[in-house]
Image (cartoon, helix red, strand yellow):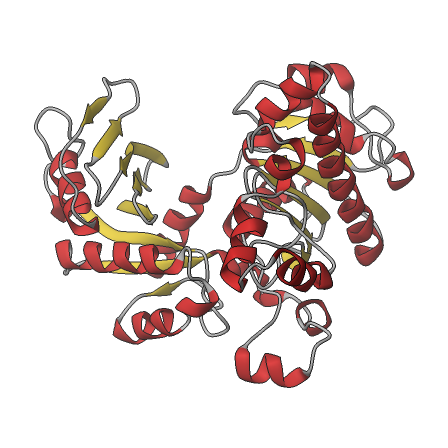
Length: 395
């Protein structure tokens, strides 16, 4: 069975076509600059890549082009669109109602549109992508997979904020958590590697956006991101957790509106804000190596906050069986992994420096120290496969 996975952004549409029977990716690509001028990159394993700059006025034009490309005699991988059994769509937010992956119909669409206020950045483009795909492929089932759904298992004391309870009841203000599809995938892989479905696992999804999640018995019990993806550890341009009064103080002292303050916290803070160099961890580390003190400080702040959460989740779970690094920074930044794990021997965590330094990019590695009580893994994430797997299960 062939499953198409779609991840729509405000001006982009990423896609992968899976042959689930063989467990392989037939093709993948990215439509960029939708609504501007248009650009597409289309890749097939062991075959020549294709790129072009067609006009993409909207998401429907983009998915229409993708479908023509997938069936093209030269660059295609299937004979007809009819070979696509279903489409899986990534949604960052499922709110309180969509707590599991679900077949999408008019009722689900109406609900997703009703919670756009909870997810103004990612919600509208994901909805546009779904509508475009449904218009182009009306006869196949469409499935929504929600990053927040992994956190439907959080206990109430972990997701309810200590605010007037009416704000939860009436405004749905709570900890939702994000990156759930990634955490679910790598935690599952760690369970397999340990041979223990009941393992206590801390997963570190460290990229331009970053989050830490605690999992016990295959269920999330806590996570660093909260009402929005702004909470938790510092990120490329996001501040992460702050004393809430800092926000109102900035608004008063700097004369900023709520929208301007939100922009400052989301787009001008984090690694970029502290270092003044870049939001890219590689650039910041390079500047730090050259003696830039602010860049060095930015990296130390990131490491400090990740370590604090690992310790907190150790206490919350009363132990840890595995620590997992994933996503762009987690999978590729060997020095940061070593810094995070340094000084955690009291938790049973240590890293073999030689193995960590030679872990091949894109591969699963056990980088645990010889006497470590807890295992430390590098596990490349695969959110698209999880979306395809959930879609297959529902259709």
